[in-house]
Image (cartoon, rainbow, N blue to C red; front, side):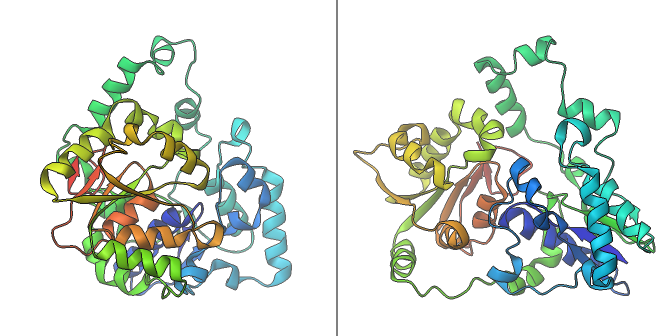
Length: 351
């Protein structure tokens, strides 16, 4: 038995489901289940955004076996009560330690799972998440020179053998395991090509029926369209370095040099649309010379349409976002240019 944990927004859910597909491929004789308990605990959304809840079934009609099906209502309620009593979502105390909490609760109910996802309350993990604020490195952390150093490190080439995580994602084992949410299929040397056909068969967007998105798809298809995914919102802390050090400017400069008459389509989280409209120059764009379109109408449970529109563009510029990465990876243009700020991210170019 293998149990794959799924949480967060649609991009993360899709990557975790790829882990489900990989484990099924590596262990065809075993039962593989998903687990999406976090979506049933409202307090979790208040700590780490779960966006529009569990979306794989609603968007892609995925009906994978769920570990919930192994228990009756009384057993499941007991499992959920044990999990809720742990308050694992209180970061200062438990650091989102769902692997230990969920595995323990499921095992107490009769399973025999080995947690291979880790212990987020270990001293090493706690120290990494709560650095010493008095240290020199921590004090320099939010200075421009530090951002430039960080950006350089991220785009510096890494030997591919060091990136290889195929054995972890396609783990062959006779043990019953709890895993998931590694999110590593967005990186180079993940082995994603081994399940590319399964992914293509699984992640099929519903047909576009509304006029606005139909018109957008037609327009995108008729131009040398370039999607820019300006992920800010809950990821601004991690992505700010790329805004501060000119990533978008470098990427757009490359696009202009290699794409004739590019037309730019800006996608971002709902709370950042106004910022993007007022700060086009940070994205490397000239509002007087460039043809720019802001995609700002797909909200809430329809936000997956942004990924669909991004994937329809001929080229993509993305930051560290799984939602944006899927828009780039699902692009079927054989001559696509996909640009990210980190060498390890599986795009055609890094700047």
